[in-house]
Image (cartoon, rainbow, N blue to C red; front, side, top):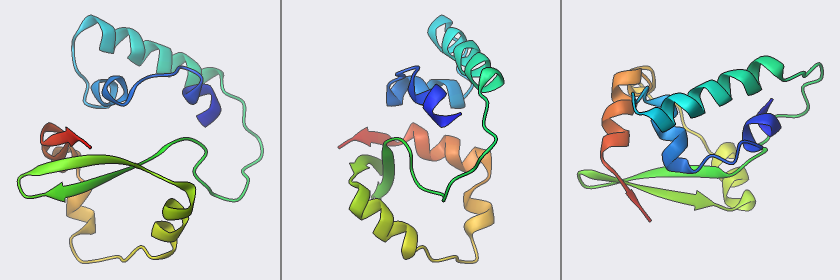
Length: 107
């Protein structure tokens, strides 16, 4: 399924517009493309979990959030060192994501 989504070649900005439910024409067209890709994807085996596509890291910088693409080595290291804290559930509520995404800057 992820390879089907990667095959759409959506930019990060286009992906975010789809996720954030933007109402412009391009976002709606891309949302439909994503829906079709997911519905047509066939996956019966699930290999060892790894990042198939590009890994993007959001880094808080004061009041803004920097968007960074990280290497496979750094992604693997980050995945092995993930810490779980008390606010993780609250931090992953959709409204929190929306607030973070509105503060993003490219880096």
